[in-house]
Image (cartoon, rainbow, N blue to C red; front, top):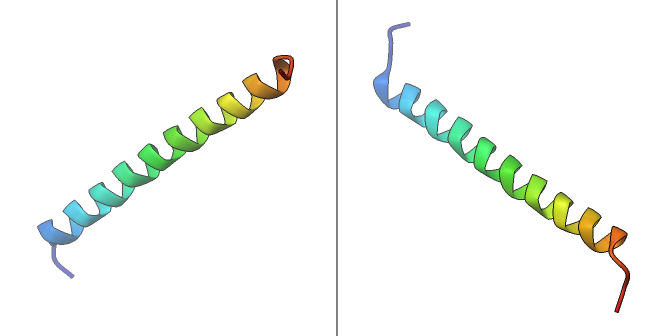
Length: 41
């Protein structure tokens, strides 16, 4: 089993996408919490 640069790149991309998705979900959560705390119009 040798080192596959293409596979390593793919893993890097997956990690990048996971981080991006996590950031987006965190932002959504912050918005939901903010709207829940703020008085409804």
